[in-house]
Every structure is written in C-alpha cells, then in structure tokens.
Length: 359
Image (cartoon, rainbow, N blue to C red; front, side, top):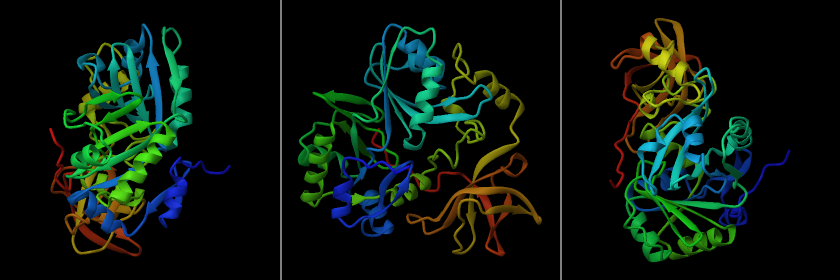
C-alpha cells in the first residue's frame, strides 16, 4: 500500500527535504541538518508539518461521559478552552494511544491522535461508543496542521501569520473563524499548533518560510527535541505492551475518576508494582545508544533501549530504556551493548534537558 502525503508534501520536495516513511505517510525527516533544525527550535523558531496527525470530534449529550470512559485523564476538571494530555488504554492497561483532548465547549471535544494509529484508534473509539448519545466523526482527512515551535514562536505567529495568540496560556486552545490554534508543543519549547483547511495551512507554510524568521524542521529533530525533555513516543515508550504506569505517566491516569477503560488494571499495577519500567540512562563517553540495543547488568540482559541519541542540547550520550523494575532506581549502574561492546552508564531522570514552556 502506498504511503499517504500531507497537503504540504510538494513544498517539502521543493525545499529539498529528505523524505522517508513515517506513520503511513511520506514525511520530511530533515531539510538542512538535524542539528541545525534542533538548534533553531531551541534558540529561535522552527515550523513542522504535522498534518499527518489524526483528529476526531466528539459532540452530543453524552460527549463528556464518553470521553471520560475512553480517556485516562479527567476532562470534568477542565473548562472549555483547556487541553489535557492522557492515554486511551485496553482493559489490561496496555496503551491504545496517547493523545491530546481539547475541550472546545460543553460536550464538544477535539481529540488529536498519532498518525500511525489513526485507523486502529478510530475503530477502537467506535467499538467503545455503544450506548452513548454522541456524534463521533473522524476529521483526520479534513485538517492540515503546522506546529510553530521555539522561544520566538509567539512573535512569529502574531507578526507573520497575523494570528493573535498572546492570550493563550500553556495547554489552552481557541478558534479564530475556522482555524483552531493551541499552545502545547512536543519539543520542550514554547509553541503553537494551527489546525485548518489544507489550503490555509499551505498559505501559512509559505508565509513562514518566505519570512525567513522560521526554519523548516523535519521529524528527525522533532524526535531529538521531544526525547531530550522526556516526552514519550508511541511505539517506543508506550505501546499495547507498555502501560502508562510502566512508562512513568501515572499522573495522567486519574484513578479517583468513577471509571475508564483500563482503570482496574492500572490501579493494580500502581498498587502492586510492575515488572518493567521506562528509565533514563546517561552513558560515559560518546557512544550512541539506539532503539533495540540491549541494556545489561552484570552480564545479564535486563532490558532494551527505546530511544537513544547523543543529545544535541547537552552533548551527552543518553537514552530511554525499558528495563526490569529492580534496576530502575536512580543511580543504578547499567551498561548498554552497542554492537559487540558494552558501555557503562547510570540511571538518571528521563528529562535530560529542562523544558521552557510559557506558563
């Protein structure tokens, strides 16, 4: 089956982007270098094509009750215009997907899901909608999306795109006509997401690039940026086999909520402990740990790397890894096998670099 293409695909090709498959789409991985693009977002402003992400709307009399049922976080605690991060889980606590839930109005929700999971998530949402008086619509084909990220993002969005965004605080959303604009980010820096028609998103992209004030950035640096600040990627730090509790994301699972799918399993994991946990490891030297590399303790394999890089912002070789829980304590010495050698490291916090969100 051929990969899909976003509304901005031709513009990426024109800019000479390196294109590669991701989540069922042909997506730009880099335009110049991952390091240049990474630094642009950390120090100035970058724009990402994230039109591959999925969007689902939930409206109707039972919309909030339904979202509460499928979502680990508690949307009853937020007002219209606010956003929550959380997960959808299977009955056994495994993760269907991690997502953002935008509360647009009372009983009106906008769910943003991962590109690779759109079909699976949509089927799962429909399967769990029985008995709810809702209108559930998959809008993934309707929206294009750009993410403008970096310390100068606010100024660029206001001055280049003419969109008023200063009034948005962290994890809030508003509409300007048919445009949805939010302030969340997946990079550890301040930033905005703009959802709109394909034509409007193409216009936004052109204005941003032509302004010279916003560097085009690919998914390569999106991964290095999110990884440095400890943000998970579905398929690496979360999956059907990796629950939010295992990934250290229990704070987004509100077990005091009346009910949600997977609640009992997650409560049991939290009470009794889990066999494996996602941790951070800092290695000595410059060797680079990669996804799938073995994590070793006293000659025995005790886990594997989920994401690893030589961190651009900290100049350290670091990784996240899923390991047996008894080796997850901060300060525990571990080794990572890179090709035929093992390299010493130590368990550290998963946030390798401090976030700089505008609160």
